[in-house]
Image (cartoon, rainbow, N blue to C red; front, side, top):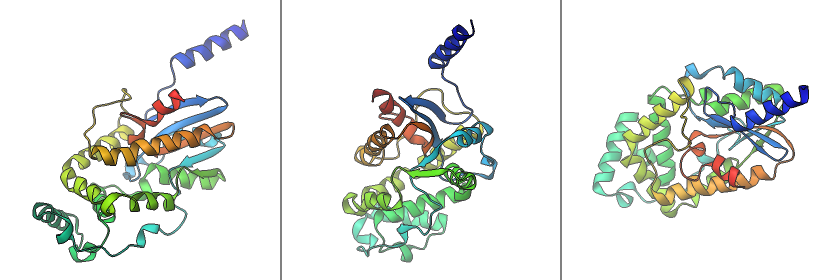
Length: 266
């Protein structure tokens, strides 16, 4: 009778996987058990401490897996190549929009004038997040990394800072389209940030493909989202047996070509 009950419970769990009060789902790849977490890289103070269910998952895990260990040292993004002035790279309208936004988020145009376009885009996005009250030390992956190191957990990287830097440097025209999309979707990106914070403070989306505004053009989406999801799928599928907490940007768990769907397809 006891074995029948255990089998019934196991079957029920497979049919009705547990739901969490934050963006996450469990997945088994043979003997690899993954707790996929939709991380927010910058968060609010109200996102501390981590949810009790997530803390428990981390305590039981053999390792924490993140995109990159952002607590490991100096950022590689400090090294930049000199590029032509922005007036030669942007249209008149784009340059005026950039000037307005720089004034809004307190970025010095003279400082960024010769930087690669991808770096300017990331700087603007980070300043926008800060104006919305978000801070890196409240981010989910930062909190997970800090807790994992306190517990002496093994930490694995899906990419690492240098690989992420190489990806950005490989973008055409030094990531000009990333900067252009940042300018074009400025207010949309702010709403998207607030939506993702709501996934942690209120409730995550029920649908694996919620209606979300696009902030990347199709070419960028392919490079920054879809191709990375596929590489991560291969890495996760090759893990040794064990239990893992896997923290990736929340948008990688949702939408077309999302990481959970790729893992299910094998």
